[in-house]
Image 1 (cartoon, rainbow, N blue to C red):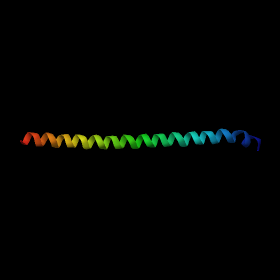
Image 2: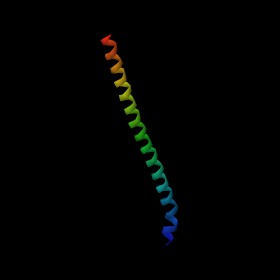
Image 3: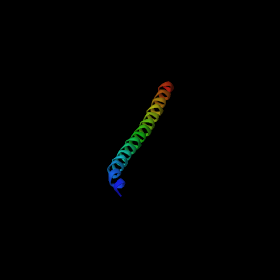
Length: 56
C-alpha cells in the first residue's frame, strides 16, 4: 500500500499533463482544419473573381 501512496501524486500529475496536452493537440488540429477550410474558400472566391474579371 505504501507504493500506491507514494506513486499516486505522480500518476495524477502525469494524467493531468496528458489531458492538457491532448486538449492542446485537439485544439491545434481543429484550428488547422478551420484555417485550411478558410484558405480553400478564399482561393475559391479569388478564382471566381478572376473568372468574372476575365469575362468582362
